[in-house]
Image 1 (cartoon, rainbow, N blue to C red):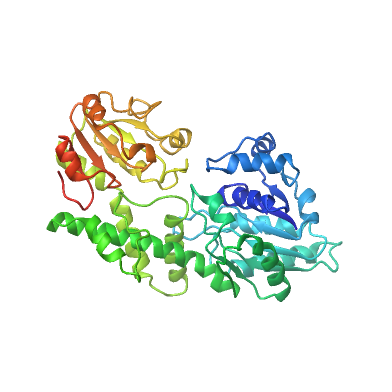
Image 2 (image 1 turned 135 degrees about the vertical axis):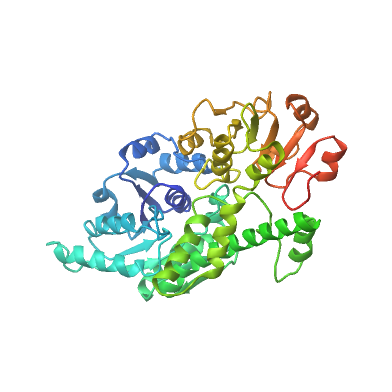
Length: 446
């Protein structure tokens, strides 16, 4: 098939590249001409394992093209995906301005039957607005007689860091449409990705739109629930890892997303929970659970800084902390809503200095921590230089290289052998044996 994808962020670039990998011809459209020029030169704007090589190969073999010109791509396309950002507004509602602008641009260049697909995470009812906007543009065009279209909701469920694998081997595909014609074309497109017999779920449009928010809110709920259980364990003397094993072994519950931590971040969970709350508010439904999930997570982001202040006092002037991990999760450079932002901001506000290290998020972190002066934070070239002369180590992101470090070297480089473990990576009994003071989450303080 011939496909256009509007937007070259995580969702758009991964989707377009994977569609091309399966033999389709794909145009990726973005109004950022500088980004398009870099993509045509093989320069990838995001870090996602496996993506860069796949982009270059498919571009070289002529299946993947990049342009800022809708007129080049849309008239040739059977299906046009919209994969632009939907940032939250002040009230938490997702902003669909970019989605509707993309739909309008597509409508101005369609010359035959076209399926317009909402791939962006959009509020319920957005497909109706897209349909209305496209119909309006077609009425205004003098050369649009006989041009037909359908709007489909096709939410993405990609996990940053493993997005390519998620797209090529999805655990499910959700297609929301009220058109049999569009349904059959979408099924034909996605069958090549579901040979693992995982389902393609077809439903009405609004159910598909709700599904995306419900899925992310459920996963976020599991995380915040375990963080509350961890707080209980710290007060009562339990071990949250043992509790996780005890409840996760129940087949009705399972182990996934039952990890206590310093909070979730990224582009999806925070934004989608906020929009779910806002959606309820718009229609008079009080989303009490989602509201609590968000509240717990915001508090959790402050937990490590609060524990550092509890140990060292409110005045941290003259103290330096090594911080391992800036990105919100490993295998990405994404800093959106990352817990590290809150932790750094809290500690610097109390006079501390930060020596940070992340394998990939170096440049992104500079943008998201631009409010922190260069005197208060440094971005180190490796994990060990961050430790030199620091008073304690703070682990924020669970990159694999942080899982089994040389603890004797850590003790030698730090002023004191103290670790604040925001991901429960280190075993308390092992740290005790090595003479390291470990502060973890829900496992007591050793």
